[in-house]
Length: 147
Picture (cartoon, rainbow, N blue to C red):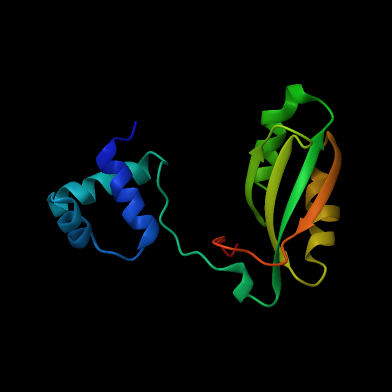
């Protein structure tokens, strides 16, 4: 469970990922040790991950694609979402309401990356009824991990 101090730390790191613990402590009027311990607790528990992210619009040889996926049996929904999330190039997988059961973000090579993902990666998952691709043409405030 995260408290208000944890939320403030996460917010600061979200805006300024390279800020040091001393500066965070100063902004929040707590000790540097408190910040260090809180960040360690948040990362160890899986609440927070600190990583370098890329603006996909600045990379010429890759593209960001969202895929809507329909699963043939809803009883397998969580299992299938977990399986899809582990595929190479998948940034995230979300179980959703509405037209699709799962929506994933995929960071693929510009040339043949999407077709390779669809034909070589996604076909490993049984029980996928259909997919629909949405290629990102321009993004605002979206960052990705270069896997």
